[in-house]
Amino acid sequence: MELLKSKEFQPKNYTQKEIMDESLRNYKNAFRIFFTSGTVSCLMFTLLPILTNQNNLPFDAWYPYNWKESPWYEITYGHQIVSTFFLTFTNIGIDCFSAGMMAVVGCQCEILGHTLLNLYEFSRLELDDEREDRNDIFGRYNEQFENLIGHHKNILM
Image 1 (cartoon, rainbow, N blue to C red):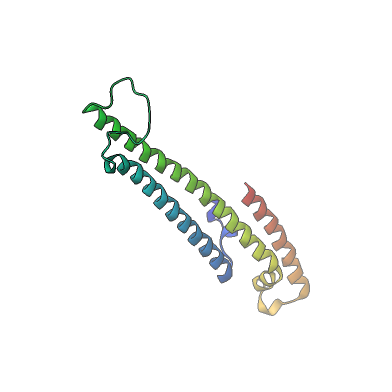
Image 2: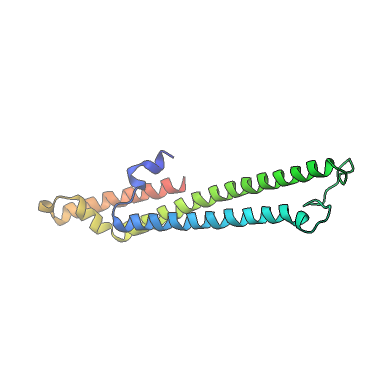
């Protein structure tokens, strides 16, 4: 995580900031959709046996006791509901963490591509306005290119 806070992983201009913001917006929207669909799905499994007025469990399973008698039905029903919510939100958390890491990698690749396309401009901006000698700009250009190679290696790690 410390690597993501380093200077090379930060946006260098407004366009790159917009790239990061768009990536974060897309990730948040995907998370909201995934979280909402998981919650609705769990609620439907919870409410379906109640709404149908049948003495069924949300999931068919074998139990070494007669679960159709009270209080075993309520205990088993509660166990299945709690387990379903726990597993659903665990899976959502793992999937969203993976998606978040992929969003960060994708965003960094886009920033890397933008920097590569505008390498000459970034090289020229880092030099003083008074020293716009062509050799200085191309010397800085080579340094920037080497930094981009390092940035790419760090993205892959």
